[in-house]
Image: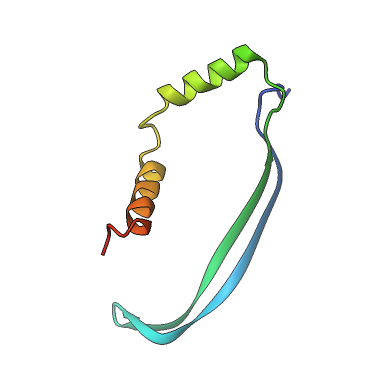
Length: 88
């Protein structure tokens, strides 16, 4: 039974997007002139009207979760660096 504080997935869509390269790329002896992107959209419902205690608990959980998602954190750090002009 879902709880009032659970995040609920409402809808998931997956679609493919063919991409044609401007110039062919060579990978390990194979020439590639096209690719296919897989796009995924997820619609979620998040809890609203949380009590003060629930908000405090979520903030505490967020503070304790630092470093638990190294791939995500690394990705966003690289994007921030790139967008600020640091990565050349």
